[in-house]
Length: 169
Length: 197
Image 1 (cartoon, helix red, strand yellow):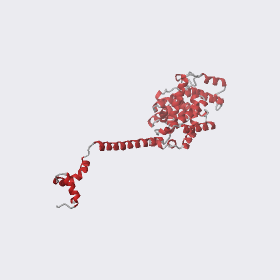
Image 2 (image 1 turned 120 degrees about the vertical axis):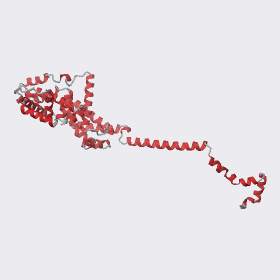
Image 3 (image 1 turned 135 degrees about the vertical axis):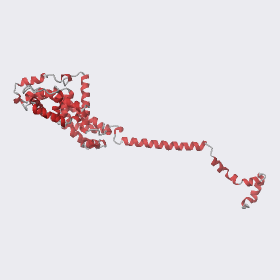
Image 4 (image 1 turned 90 degrees about the horizontal axis):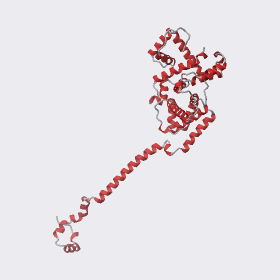
């Protein structure tokens, strides 16, 4: 709090906040202009700004601690040790491999399901086409069977070679 | 997000994410002194500051696979540092250890140590300028700030962070940072103005 200089006008809390922001270059143009007007006419405010600036600069005298060479080496070797002991799930490539494995798993599952479905339906559901194929020789020769009286007669015809002759159309 | 991608340290972190160890080493080299300096002022103990700095790097390294740039790297790093420092302080207070810093409510209270140093010196302010005693006085003045004020001052003064970046680091609005820094600098001015006349 400044005690010297004429007591012209106390700044409001907002103006005091703006004074610091002005020094930090964080004030927008209208507010910066207002602060400049205040500074131009108010020596108390000018003194405040001067003190704020000079006490802020004093902080430059504070020592800056720095890392020792030992610290750097210890940190880097600790990081390397993490790499060695790091679980496989923490490896950079793990996520990509995991995603690929999930996609491959789904595709394999779908293919297996399709195969199983095919086998099951093929085994247990009657197939009319297959029945037709199985009966095809009988169907093709149905006219002969109709003309024949019995199986013995047909057997005699076969042995006589009659089935080898072309049929009259 | 695009703006952050131009940050060279974000680029280093992305390379570290892809498994480039030398990129992470570069980040350690770039930030170790800065973190230690800030932590030393916050904790008042350089050994503790080094331990915490190492902890920050370990956390960041372990988190590298999930890293997504959503802020400047320095802002992101100091946010982690701030969280770890807060956790560390909480754990210490739970263990009822001797506090390193004054309570927040004491932020504007007079610090006996500061006056003792000034009185003991028996010197005019001009004569102790740039001396070790002056550094103690300044450090004492810094200690009168509460934790948030101190961190904001350190980030603003030594990291040259904007109010917006400080806000992101400390999870505060820019307006709150402005107010925090204004209060802090008034406290510092009250404590130190006799040393600049």
